[in-house]
Structure formats: C-alpha cells, structure tokens
Image (cartoon, rainbow, N blue to C red):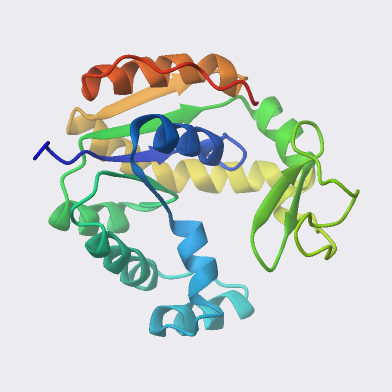
Length: 224
C-alpha cells in the first residue's frame, strides 16, 4: 500500500484556498477536508460539537479550539486509510499542536496574496447562508442575480467581506496564523506561494505536489 499523504493549506480570507484545494483533490486524488463545511454541517445535524458551536456563533463569539478540534478530528479518523488535504484547519497554534499529536503532515501550503487583490475578491463575494455556497460576481456569478442557483434563496454579503472590515480581519488572521506558519516552517514542511491570480499560482503548486507524489503534473485548470 502506498504511503498516505497528509497536507494542509493556509491563507487569508479571499486567498483562493477553496479553489486551489479542489484542484488538488481532483488532480491528485486527495480527500478534501474543509473545516468550514464540517462546521456548517454540524449545526443542522445537531451533533454535540455542532450544538456547542451554535451557541458561540449566536452570541457572536469565536468558536473555541476544543470545539473545532472536537468536530474535525473525528472526521479525519473516518479517513484514516485515505490521503487528505485540510482547508481551514488548523487555524490556531493550539489546533496545530493537537493535530500534530495525532497526524504528521507531509506538506503545508501557505498562500500570500496582496491586500488589494483580497479586497477586490471579497467585495465581489456573495454567500448563500444556509449552505455556505460562495459566488463571485466577477468570475462565478449566480445564474439569477442575487439568488442561489440551487434553492433560489437570497444571497447575502457578509459584513466581514466589506472593505471597511477587511483590514481588521486580515490583521487578525496574520496574528493568529503566524505561530502556525512558524511551526510548520521549523518542521521544514511549509511552502509559500505569492501572486494575484490563482491560475498563475496553480502551476507551481501542481509541480510541487507532482514531485512530492512522484506523478506527472496535470493540466492546469483555467478558472480564477
């Protein structure tokens, strides 16, 4: 049996983590593990962690590390015989240390995207709140303006995605992410990629993973 490959992707809001993660999963056969998807699914499913998480969200508070790890780690246990890519976890040093105690990551990708690019992307981002589906008015608009493609329900723009809140949000991300990035840097598994366009960053990530997994690079996908 081939050695399992475990990786994570880090980046600020609007950096393209979700887009690149899905390309990696499709191109290299890794299971895509989005902590955001699991967190959203946990609330309507009324799981123990989901119920705890809902109480924090309703009060406008950050979800504590132990609640997040309590939701994500059981999902990884279900994938114990699979290679996977984590998106959105670990967010904090505490989460990274808990993960380290259970799994040794082979690779961590960090996306460094200029502030102006993030501002442009997020100001165009609209969300279907019930499902978490994300639309971008520039390159992934809904079929009907302002409506979710599947349910037809109204889309919203998060206050956090508005330019006036973005600087504070990015500053908070950097403060929380720096210790995580430093940890993986000292472990020698961090690879950083900078740029303003996902399509221009992707070939370098594709080449790196091809080398790590001993495969031929796949054709680059051409969506932003």
